[in-house]
Image 1 (cartoon, helix red, strand yellow):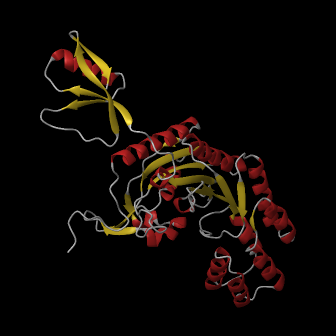
Image 2 (image 1 turned 45 degrees about the vertical axis):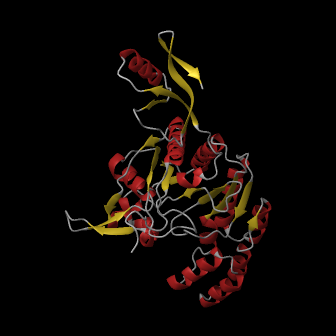
Length: 384
């Protein structure tokens, strides 16, 4: 029998120094978003399941914890992603015309970890821009994400680009059975040329289209991929337009980029440019985002939408380690002048740790490098 205090797998307490850093990162990113004009929203942790999994949220079904509401008897879901909720807020509660910029930060819960050793309770932070169909929206949310990573001193930043319209553009007008389409997407996502050929044969695709799809799985690398793709897909106008969009975005960035036109995971979610931001020393992306114009369709407003999200708990592992914060040690006492001195120091932004009677203080987050002492009848701060 396990101990009562043992937590579920991939769920952990966040201890003092890490919890403080997460909070500082949260404040930093939300303050940066405010500087861009993004308004903060706080959706509920639970909703009726059909609302959470409506539209593009259906891909979250297996990641969503379900429970029964004892008040209504209806099935509720614990959110696994905040984006569908923000889309509902934009569509129903705000219902604004024109551009709407929203940001959020809060925990989400996953039934399974997204990768080995990952938490099942990420602290998801994100920004969403609604109502603008142009590439300026993608550029703005990407610049916001990059400026945040730069300010917290993340090293070796690289942006990997893809585009949902490349694969859908190749398949434009082609009738394929759902099972065959899933097999095709799966083979493209795995860059499995042999499996892709088999999926194309099963779907009875033309030799020209099969050749183009097989070429797609090899189109990943540096900027040369865009030129190679322009030649390979010259007969597909929608694909050429997607490549031009990627070229425009890349031309406006000053960080290293890579291109992966075969990145097909989440194909039912993204509708245009998609990006993932990597940093030095981490194999998985820290930031993911892109365009998802259909996210609000189920709520009655299928308008332009683009955004990004990241897990602050994952970010903690890559930002430079923080030194312990300086603090002032002070005796505890009922003397009015002592209590006034402590109050003034705290009001001025200092951390003052009172030494309670007959007790010792163990601190992970603070280091007392000064002490409040009575010197010549006055309370003064002196170095230790």
